[in-house]
Image (tube, rainbow, N blue to C red; front, side, top):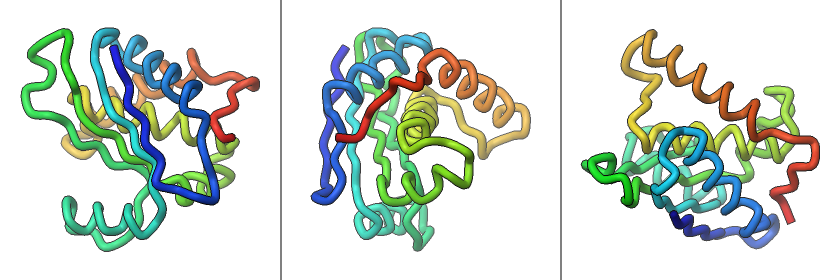
Length: 150
């Protein structure tokens, strides 16, 4: 299992080892302990550009997931890319009653579940299924000692 992390930010940075271990734990909790993924942290301009290009929505969103086709066919496979907009995540953390670290974890879980085939935008049933899985994983991995930002 491998997690590739890249940050395109200068003002705020993440702890790559901690984030990488956490991403591996998310994959483990989701039932894909052998899967690989890449994780990028971007600013608002880059996220808006990605959102506009791939979802035809012209604003910076909090997280995007780019799954690989047929990625779940093999137990040892690259499942795709998760892109988190750190400025948006930090701004919305308090709105959701989360710390910055909790919000990053929440978005990491959300994006990873999208890579694994969960999709809250298809049906109400699927949305509920995804939300339950998110809460379960978040409950298992969230900790007051969690420190993702450097």
